Length: 403
Image (cartoon, rainbow, N blue to C red; front, side, top):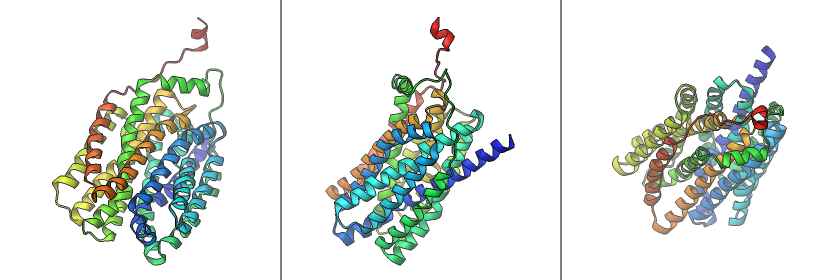
């Protein structure tokens, strides 16, 4: 029993380190929008499209990397993902064309993220811990990703100011390479195949016919739209409004810091209250916070910092709750794959949020339309989650099936 507990704790620790690196490095990409666009003579849409492509590739690859992790374990998937991430960052630092930016920041880093973030890591953790502790464990690992965002963002800004954007990205690539040995240590134990287990195809058919699964997917689309739009475009929005560059980096750091509290709290609350109801109130609160920040309160460094704190509490709180619902309803046998499908919708939303932000900015010269869309989507997501049932799906036993 002690050996099993140590193995579980090691898995949580290593998984937390991998997610911290993956999410921490990614969280600073918005700081590169202005210097890269200015130096290379791009409109903001070029950078925004590459980041949008990154999120789309990440999402499209996620069900497949999740299925591989369910079948063979997370170690090989995470190690290969870390290698692709590191190579992508290094090529991004050398890119001087829109195509190079899309291939490096978009395709390679997108593939890398699919192997080093939530669906793969949380699937491994979900299989390793007891059901009553699953939501809490997922909250801890998700909070580690938030800590990475907070801890690494000042370093990213420091590298950018000290070395310039190209050399800073090369150094970040070297840091990403640490995920290769760490990923190899993720020796999770995929659920053993039992006669009562459904096949991969049957699990897909089961999810496809479940209304709550699709509501969860649509709700996660909204999450992706909001957080990636804010993460990439908020520094530019604040800079355009006359605030210093360090204000934008500080706001993103505050998001990461208070996200630690938000994700841990969400994981804990998800073990005691309805996860779907918590998600409803979370999305409604996001809408209120965005409305107040953009349209009601005069913009200043203080209001920007308050926005970072409030959004941080709500930022990745959706992750342990959403993955927790998937685990409760469908079980853990195909958790990484089913969670990957839900995450695909998150990334479709991310693609729309980051690309639409850049396209509408170049078209209109401001972000007001996208902020309004984000507020409207908060209301839609809140309504969708209200109608999700957390009742575990009933599967006939072999005796019942024969009868």
